[in-house]
Length: 387
Ligand SMILES: Cc1ncc(C[n+]2csc(CCOP(=O)(O)OP(=O)(O)O)c2C)c(N)n1
Ligand SMILES: [Mg+2]
Image (cartoon, rainbow, N blue to C red; front, side):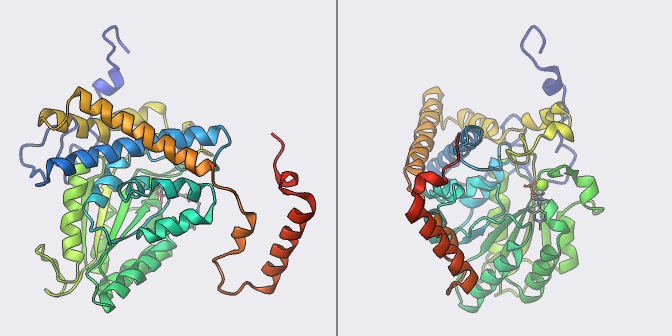
């Protein structure tokens, strides 16, 4: 910092997306770029996008803090990546299905599922059920394993003549898995209405993008499977909205207005590469200083999706100081309430045996019975960890 409070690294940092072939609506300072088309949304929708970004950031900060206090388990922070998850989900219909990896918390916020989401991260099965009712598949930790399922669900929509798409989120690292290629191939051959939402945040834990692929972009991988791949600034919520909207129209059963290579009356998959950066650690179990310099983040912080959206709303008279404070207060409240509700859920360890099998195999039945017998004999207290 100099005497004027200006951080030289940020001030002088080059815009990491300036020369890239990525779609953008908002410049780094939040003003619309000269050639960009601002999506034609109601004031209410613009403000809802901002509100969801702020709630997601607040949720993220509190979740990391809860983990540090031992109140939730390992958590994958999303700060920096809210624009893509929030913007893209606003572009979907309410009954479009979302299938995600583990970092796209903003999608869950847009679907208004925060209350169910924390119990879910705490391991309570009721959370899983509630988010499924909101057309969100349970998160997936086994990298890329959810992609074939997402394609299968999209194929089912097509078979049932349902005009729905599946937005399937995953990271740059997931593109090196066989499941990614199998899912992409199947989607291309069978024209499934799938949006492959690849979040290129530059890293797969400590593996940088350059060691992940020799392709010049992740979007290019769609070419091999016969459908379109597009790149967008994932830290620009409005560009993420616009690109997803167009891709979803193309993916819908009626073909939408957007064209595409598929049959005019049929669905077509699209790969969207959201170019972005995670500000924090891979998870609460990671230390990013082991593989990147702290100031590597600075040029990306200058593209913070919340700051850009706020600047856009202010400049277009859609929000003022009072409005910003009101949104932040609302976010604090919504997240605090979700935490209180989650911590009030009574744990039922036997739940871990439910739901994977319609009929529990004998060995698991035995384990469950042993657990229940031990709880009965010794009481819940005997199973609590000594702090
Ligand atoms: C099949 C599989 N292999 C390895 C891992 C360990 N692992 C967890 S997250 C991760 C990196 C994934 O990177 P990316 O897909 O870019 O997503 P990001 O974490 O950057 O959002 C790895 C290798 C795993 N969960 N599953
Ligand atoms: Mg990644």
